[in-house]
Image (cartoon, rainbow, N blue to C red):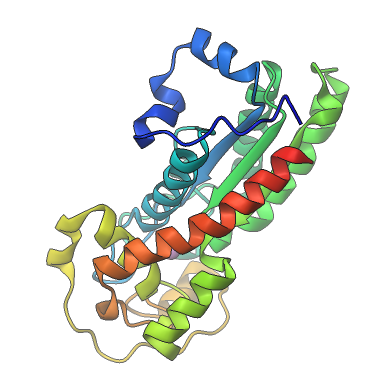
Length: 262
Ligand code: NI
């Protein structure tokens, strides 16, 4: 579809960052492509050795790689997500589900106002999924009721980089059961690749509590006292992180292409 032609690869990921464009450049971009990538993470504890920003760092790294290879613009990362269950740990900053729904709604509507029609959300945190989908539903209704330009064409798609099949298989192959469900070696590997200074935090940890249900933050702390859920993040390596970004990007570029062509 002509209006959603992939702009094509760029040499540096800086070339696709929305925050480095002027509004006139964005207007030019919209003449050929109506799509944009929005990375979203979370600011929450990731065990005793993982960075608080893990979910935002990983989503941003994957989003910028997808953007670099396709030329599709990447919005600034939404670094705060729904992390209520991690609030028992210092440094966690959470949005309530209703706040995240409102944030997503407002960001999508802002983009739609000036002609974006396809918002491709690359997510790094499982706790965001329900609120993101609810935010999309609310945005569609608002776009129609506000009679936004071409509102009927507005679509949002949620993809979770850590749920890409090849990523899951690679994590199984490298870490087996020690991948766990939170502060996983796969996500920590991506952060080590993006930010090598994080390597200094890595140290062996005692066996983790097995992953299971999550309720309130006090319950979370009782079940998972050091913040990990069944994982051994000491298995993480920067070289693995590079592979995870590549595997996730290959799959998500396909998804993005299909989404922009639909
Ligand atoms: Ni995480």
